[in-house]
Image (cartoon, rainbow, N blue to C red; front, top):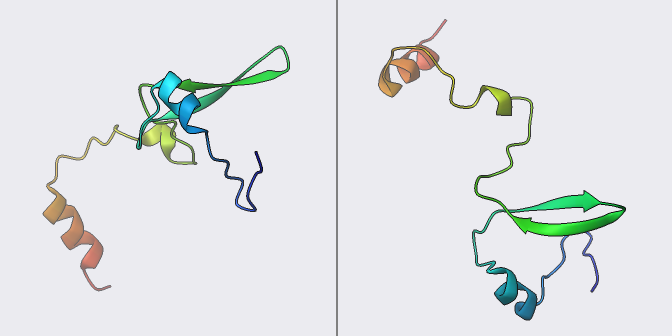
Length: 74
């Protein structure tokens, strides 16, 4: 296999079938003893500076109310 310039690699069909990997399947890479393994995950791996804040909003406003605040002119 060859890695593309974007860091992508194609998982061969027979491997995808054995692992049950279909389009939109979430996978992760695990390292054990210097070897890496592909594993299916139940939830997406959230990466980024705001990932720890996901799902903790406590504002009691509707989406329309929030949008109107962001669109008001200064």
